[in-house]
Image (tube, one colour):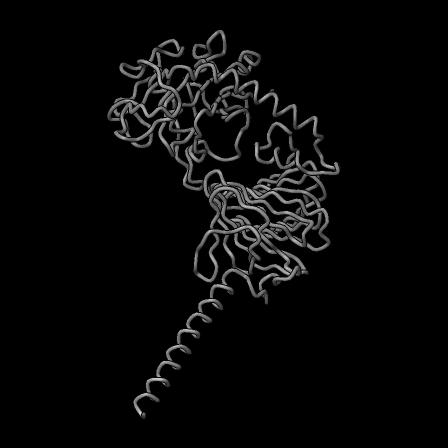
Length: 434
């Protein structure tokens, strides 16, 4: 009888322990996923301050040192780190009427969030905000600087140590690491960088619709109610122009002109890279670099066993110099083709993860075009100084090379732009009088 009573007591204790373990697991999970509200931006039941409204692709959140996939409807908490992967996006809503959207390959920490305001740290990528219904400030830290916006529509980006704040409606107050207080009005952008001496540099300029990223244009076109510094017609024209340019480039994708060579190094440099032709014109492809055809993503090897290759196009032009020959440095005219085209639109193979710089180097090596670039540790990127013996400042104090991808000029280095299948790269030499 005594043994039976002990067994019953033991079973009760075991059940209690199991229940306690389950309850503890629910409490821990509930805390991490914001089921119980509290001090982390609101709770369940409709009073949440910042909520994940929508995710596309793979989006991760790290909370209290634990990482998991961010789900729609998750109540965000102070200290959350949101990271978007390739081709993904996270859209957060604040008090239902305002949105913060983190583009692909971005990382953002929610420092604090309450009814009194939001504080974020943008580590990488691009954040688009429509906060027109907000009456409290949004504070975003980037590059050791602080941007504060109350209401309005704006975007913030952090790439390779350079921060940019663009204002489309309203105004942004910027507090720089150097102690400056600056104001950016609608239609303006501020670029925050450091020079080689480590000194803070802040440059406010007027925005052009053509300078906007495809993601920003998509977001601006979705903003309702008007009042932005760009009209829908301005933005749609940019989209149409880029699509037309892309359509022209796509014609060259029918056949891969420059293929990945056997033994080519991981960064895209050929083991036996060639120099430029004597007359400065683009030469013929290096031996073995052009043969057959390759549809994009077809898996043709060309050099990397088992690694699928993709295809993009590249064009190199110095046509702007033709209208500024009077400013051209002595002796440089021999490197300017009569057409202004150094390399006509050419298809080039690339591997997953390669950049605009890798493909530019590969194309120049294969076609016998001189190219010189320098790695800039400050920005963690390569800077193209010269192509076809035409360098920055050769045709005026503001002259040099710019690159465009699908009609857009990224505000970061070409070795930071990771290519997508079918991308169109265009290098243009710009002159000070342009």
